[in-house]
Figure 1: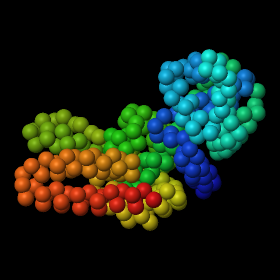
Figure 2: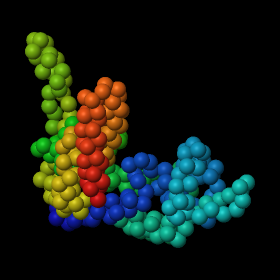
Figure 3: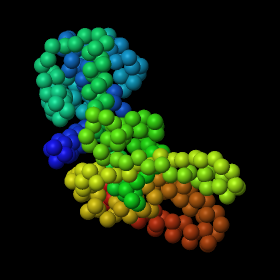
Figure 4: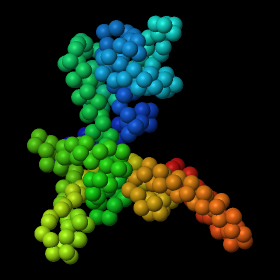
Length: 300
């Protein structure tokens, strides 16, 4: 039973990661919500205002998301400026079918439409299900790069760009949640730095930090992820993660770019100090060239 659960969950993570390259779920779920709303709408096309009302989202955020979906060819626009409407394109419908079939909602586009609050609840449920799989995948990769395959919830939350509280709701589903047989993570409580300081000062105040560690089942899933295999075969990616003390490529990239910006600024300032400044600037520009090369090669 456990083996079949592992296989099903692994396949879900693989396929969602493939489709994530079209819609980046780490930035926002609005694009996905719009596609689902257009797919479940009784009308073949909706205006931007109708989409905003249907999802309870600001009109500006909807307009920005629609522009991106148009650029990706997932929706089509009809009508003039005053009455323009949006509907799924063939590629958008195909994308949605693939995504929904992963979660067992393959007939979503053909089923009778559920109106009102119940319809919106179902839409949000599907979005949350997809988001959960996405963030579990990202956390697995983060923990792969960490010592003992464990990290504080704050570290993981920063890496995947979520609040610690929100991320815990996703991770706890695969930690000790009744009804879920997959146990990918183990929650560990460790004394915080403040606890050690209080102990030195003779104060009895316990402060703990929450860590998540991969279980054997979690490691089994991780080792079979194509993205992990790719990461393991890329030594420059591991070097980049080590140099930036990061657990995820996106975090490492942000830190590396900040290093390049700061170092370049210091290098230009150092040029004001004569020959020593020139040596410093030359050394930095050499290091920066190597760092940029590592970033480019690590991202392949």
